[in-house]
Length: 201
Image 1 (tube, helix red, strand yellow):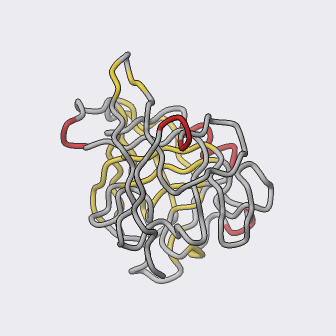
Image 2 (cartoon, rainbow, N blue to C red):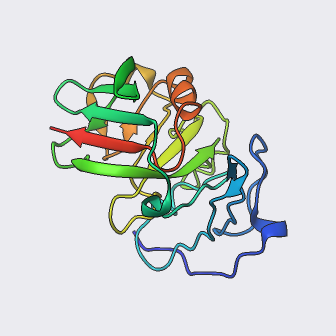
């Protein structure tokens, strides 16, 4: 699956407000999300590499793209255990909530390691089947939390919702971590760019 040809971003055209399901005019967005009053966004450029199914999925909402190394230490932390398909959210090293999730069909599909959150999107667009963000048939569900797995810019591997909640708790994905939509919405509200995510076998 090839990448998308880079285009120059125009903030007034490409930034789609969160909650709106208008299809964007290009595959480029300008992040303008602020954390504690400080802008952390950078221009999104897809380049020629493979991205989060950019032919099969497009993101609608605020794009949050950040250099994780430049962000302050996070007060939250996520651990995902592929062996039992559990995601645990920690706040100051205290486990707060655990969730059943779906991980890769094969052991190698979901990459292990520690990654940072660099992209957060409400109502991601699924382009392959032309399904807009917020549609109950959208396999990405209602949220996308992208991880800085090398070579992906947070657009290939991430934590997202689902349109198949019956598969949660199983090894069913192509590599991402799926959650129930209400649960990924909760998680989305409790993390931010820079939050670390550890994935273990």
